[in-house]
Length: 70
Image (tube, rainbow, N blue to C red; front, side, top):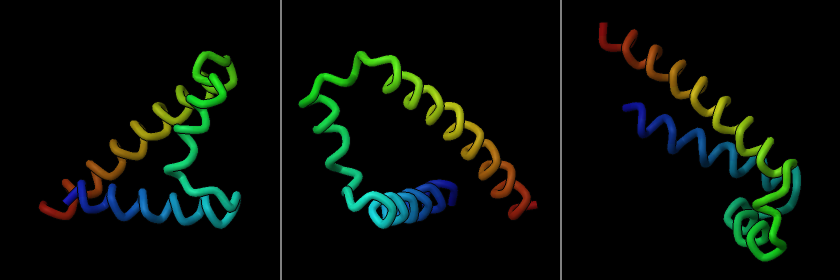
């Protein structure tokens, strides 16, 4: 169940990203590599922030899913 929720949320996030930027999500990573931005501090900060937010989101969805089956 949690995997289905994650997939739906990713599709939603990709749509929001495109609507706000006009850029497809799958084009971001190749562009980062092409321009050598992987080692920049700004990029590392963005990645670390995403990791923290992703973990918090997954933890909250895990709790919601557990509640559904009680």
